[in-house]
Length: 612
Image (tube, rainbow, N blue to C red; front, top):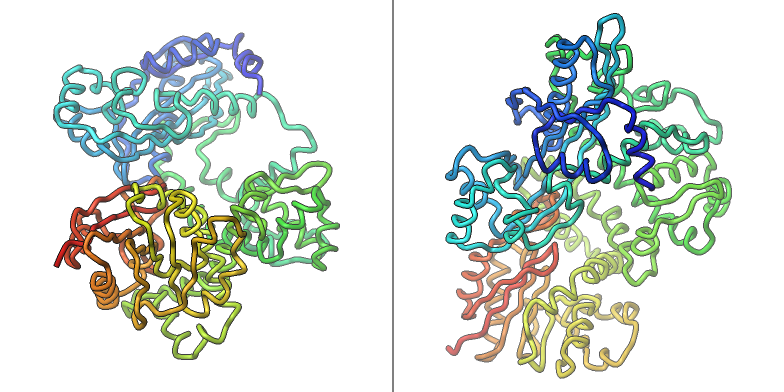
C-alpha cells in the first residue's frame, strides 16, 4: 500500500488531533499529515469492568475524546472540523489495565508488574468525520485498535527507581516510554513499534484507505464474509442459495445487531446520542459474541483438515468451488460456504481464479508437511472435542476429563485395540513436538551427557533434535509397545537416527533403561500426584549420582506469550510455578535445579542427581 496518496486524502480537509501527546503529533507529522491540535477535555472515567475486553475500553475512550472535541468546536464556531482523530493507549498485563501513573509509587507498582514479563499495548483509535447541517452536527465514527506484545527484561530495584526518578514514566501509559529511556527496559517487541509509542500509523493508513477508497465490485463478496457466518449458514447445504437464511445477517451483509443496535459508529446525518447523553446503553459485547462463536471456527478448521482440503489446494489449486466439490464428492453449495469461511478465517485466498492456500495453511495444515499441525487438528476433532462436550458433568463431579476418558478406554480395552486411535494421538504429539523440541533441546547446555532416555518420547522428535545438537549423545526413546511399534512411520532417516533407539516398556512397571540423563517432556502434568511421585521415585532410584533429569512442562499463564486462557487445565493438571518444580525435583533427590523458558509454550527444568 502506498501511504502518501492515502494521507493525501486529508490534505485539503480540516483535521484535528484530539490529543496533547507530543509522540502522536510527531508520528502523524512525519507521515505528512497536516492537522490542528485540540486536546480533549473528556474525563477518562469509564468503568473498566463494564467492558468485555481491554481494547474495547481503549476504543471507547478514544471515541469519546474525539466526539467531545468535535462537539466543543462545533458549539464554539457553529462549524465542525472535517475530521477529528482520537486515540487512547493502555498497557495490559494479565487482565489489569495500566494507564498513566499518578505518582512515583504508582509508577513503581506498574513497572514491578511488568518486570520480567510480557504484556500487551493496545491503542484504540477513532476517526470521526463531521459535517454541519442547519446548525446541527452530524458525525460518522470509524474505530479500530492495534495490539503489540512487549517483553521487559528482569530489572533490579535500583534500575527501576533510577528510571522512575528520571521523571519519564509520569505521563506515559504503563509508566514507560519505549522511544526514550524506557527502551532500555525492553527485551523485545512483537508487532507495531509505533503502536507502543502511542499511535498505530500503519493500521491508521489502512483504515483511511478503507474509508476513502471504495472496494472494487469483485471484492464486495469477499467483504461480506469478514466474520464467521452464523451457524445457520451451514444448516442449508443445498446447491441453491437461500436468501435471508441467517436471522442475524443484515440486508447489507453485515453482522446482525452491530449496525442497527450495537455499533457505536454513526451514519452520516444521524446525530450521535453520546453528545447529548441520551444513550445509556452498555458497550456492545463484541468480545463475548466472538468468544461464543469461537467453537464454530474450530469446527470449520477441523472439517477442512478432515476432508484434506488443504492438501488438495496445495497440489491442484487454485480451484473453483464447483471443482473442489466434485473432487470431494460433496454438495457444491455447502462446499462453497466452507471455502468462503476458510477464506474469512485467513486459511485460504480467494481470487477470480478460485481458492488457494495461504502460506500458513500450506506450512501447517497439509497432512504431510514438515511443520504440519494436521495431526493435532484431527486429534482435537476426534477426541478433545468430545472431552470438552462433557465439561459440565466434570465440573459438577470434580472429574478430570482427560483422565476420565482415558480410564473408560482402558476399561474397554480401546488403547490396545484401536490402532487408529493410537496413531491419532501420536500424530498430535508429533505435531506439537515439532513446535517445541528445538527449544527444549537448547534450553540448557547438555553436552556433559553421553546418553539420554526420553520417557514417553512417542515418535522421537525430541530425540532427533538432541542428537543433532549433541553429536556424542545416544538417545533411547522409552514408550508403550503399541507406540514404539508405530513410531517407524514417523522417522525420516538421517545419520542422527543411528544414535536413537526405541525400546518398548511401561514407565510404571518395567525397568527403566540406563542413561546419564532422563527426560520427561509434557508428561508430569497429565498424571495425578500419586503416579507422578511414583514415576519420579523410579527415575531417582535408577539415575546415578551426577546424572540429570530434564523436565519440560507447560509454562504458567503469566509467563507465556500466548494470551489464551488456561483451557488446557480443564483437561489436564494445573501448570506448576518454577518454585514448585524446584521443590518437586529436590524432594526426589535432584539438586542444583535450574529453570529456563523454552519458546512460548514450555518451561524446562534441569536437576542433577545428588549422592545418596
